[in-house]
Length: 380
Image (cartoon, rainbow, N blue to C red):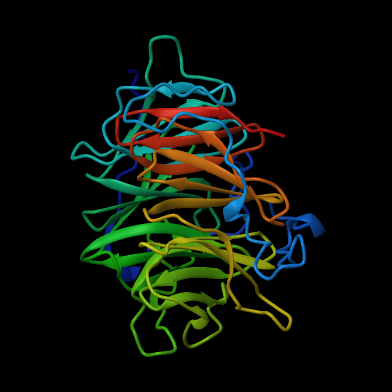
């Protein structure tokens, strides 16, 4: 693999009380999911045949596909092994031109390839050697500065990488693991601490020297100090905890996060860009994917979108009128119409242990614990 040059500037190691971004300047359009909701993208809970509950898409037929097996060939939607021989690839981010992913190992690698394919014989270019065990990626920019990739890690370090060459612009350290970075409203949000649930914190206006106005912990209204699991961004910050799904203004104008809907075992979360509808997964025997509108008489009232998912939904992405999700245990990527009018489709199969998911304007990408990055054409 080829190694790209690093910047000569030294990283800045500070406590996380010292780590913003607004528009993504200079980075090719990042696809976090469709920003424009349409009438077809709204939840439609009206029964299809007049019987209560028949609107649930969980009874829709699945696409014909073999069951996923570790390392099995992927045969759907022009699926190809985009990169192989990776070492525990987890987080993945796709722009219109480039794919980035983390190899969550002691070597701490962020790798990249053009979306059309890696160079012949190259299983992914070594974009940057970062802190050990990198576990999350977010695109953004430093306050008043260049576009960067924020990388979180199990060591407590959060690194800002130059998107041009993978050089380290800055590095901030914290006590405990940092996870799930997202940037919205000029601030970098991430969980900081040990264990699967850790306080949600905001690094205000991150710059070359740290958080311009310090770090703010986002408490929940029930007094729990964050305890976030996964986060998503729309117009605001959304995150799951052991108690449910919460939201907080991206402007940090509220003293605490507000409970959107109460549920136990909430895991992955996704939101369409204008915050009209929020989606989350619930793990366990009665697990599934749920959604709820954010306004109107039914605001916060859960509607089952996909049921009978006893395993773990590792990731979800909203893209236009569709919702994509990764079923870790089945090793599959699914897509469902958010209006509940169409069947559930298998987009990628044979992943083994599905871990990360990214969607851009042309492709669907997924990471697998078998060391593969898989790419499929995005069906129309």
